[in-house]
Length: 561
Figure 1 (cartoon, rainbow, N blue to C red):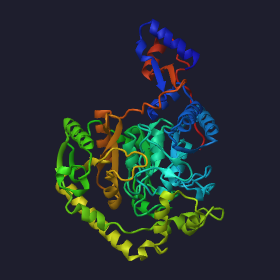
Figure 2 (cartoon, rainbow, N blue to C red):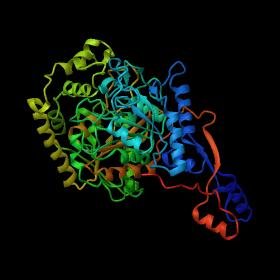
Figure 3 (cartoon, rainbow, N blue to C red):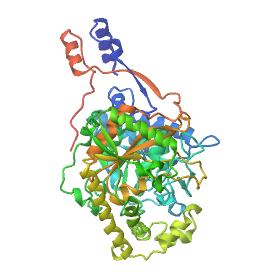
Figure 4 (cartoon, rainbow, N blue to C red):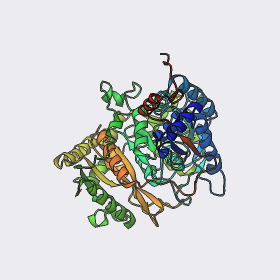
C-alpha cells in the first residue's frame, strides 16, 4: 500500500472510524485462491512476478528434491517471470484483463504450447514445439494467465490408474508418496494439490480429470462434449476427449471454465454453441443450490449390497464417506434417493469397441508440420521411445485400420449405442425430476504405486464419456485413517453445467473437505502481512473529515484497443 494510504489508515484508526481488525490481512501462498490473489494484487502486497517465483521455489524444493520427490512437473516455463513482469506493468497501467490476470497455471503436457515442448509424456515426442497454442491455452493466455509449467501424465493419456511416462517417470500422490495420483492427469492433480500453481488443466477421455481430482482432493470439471474445444490437445479418442480445469475450489475451477468454454471453428463439435450466448457460470456459485434439489444415487457403482458385480469390490471406507455425503446433502435441503439406470452395464458395454487412436494421433502429428519428431503412430512404435506400460496400447492402436472412424462399422455401431445410452440416462433424470446423479468418483482409495491387481474403483469412465454429458467432482473427505482423498461426483444433462456447478459449490461450502497435503508445508516467504484498502464508502467518509484519500486506489488509464 502507498505511504499516503498508510497515513490515512493510521489517522482513521485514531479517530475511531475504522476497526483495527478490518485493516489487517495476511496473504498465504498455500491454498491461495484466485480471489485472494487478486485482493493481494489490488493492495500492492503482491506482484505476479513475486507469485511466480514463490511457485517456482516450491517446485524446485518439493517436486525434484528428496528420496521420494513428487515428480509432477516435466518442465517449467523459462519465460514465466518475464511474462509476469509484463502483466504486472499492464495491470499498473490499464488494470487487469480478467480475474485470471497474472495467475500461474499448470498445463498437462498433452496441450500444445507454442513456446514449450508438448510430448504427451513420450520421449518419442521430445523436443516437439507446436506451431501454436491449444485453443484452451490461448484463451487462458488472452485472459492474462501465465503458463507456469507442463505437468506429467500417463503416457499418451492411456492409463486412468497411474501417471507414468517415459519423459519423466512416476508421479506420486502428495497425500501419500507411496500411492498413485490416478491418471492420466496425475501430474496436474499432484501439482495443484501441492500448491505448485494456482489452477491447472487436465484432459478426460475416461476419467482423467475427475479421477486425479478425486485422488488429490481437488475439484474437476468435465464439460459437455461440444462446449469446450479439443483443438491442440494430443488426442486419445475424439469421440470422448475433453479438456478442462482442475482446481482447489469450485470457484477457481469455474473461473477457468468460463475462460475456455465456447465456439472454436477448429473443433467441429463446438458448432453446438456457435450461435449461443453462454451463461456467466460464476452466477451459479450459490450456497443454497442444494435446497430442494433432487439427486439420484447410483448405488450400483459403489454399494456391494446393490447386487452389482461392478460394486462387489468397493471399499467400505468409500461407502461410509458416501453415506456421510448423502447426510450432508440432505441437511442442506436436497432430496436424495437411490436410483438405477436400467441395463446400465449392457449400455456401457455397447458404447465401446471403437479404437480410433491411430487415426486421431496421425492427424495430430500432421498438424505439427514438417519438423515433427515423428510423423505417424508407426514411427512412434518404431522409435521404441516410450514406457513399456504403453506398449500394448500402442500396438492395439496400430492394429486398427487407419481410416475415418465413420467408415468403420464398429465405430458406427458404438456411436448408435451411445445415442441409446443417452436416451436411457435422460429418461431416468426426467422421469424422476432429478437435477443430477451422484456417486463416488472412485469406489476405492488410491492404489499403492506398482499395485496393478487391487480393486479398480474407477466409476468415471462409464458415466460421462459414453454419453458426452457433463460431470463435476468435489472433495468428499478422506479414507484410511483420514489420509487419502475421495471425491463426490455430480453427473447431469448436456449443457447443464450451471446446475452441476451450483450443486458442487453448495456441497463444497457446506463441508469444506479440502485440505492441503501435510508433506508440502509453507516455505519461508510465502506469508505476507499487509493492510487492506478501505472500501470506497470509507474513503468518502475520510474525505469528509479532511483526510486525504490520495493513494487509496491505484489510478488506471484507459487501455488501448
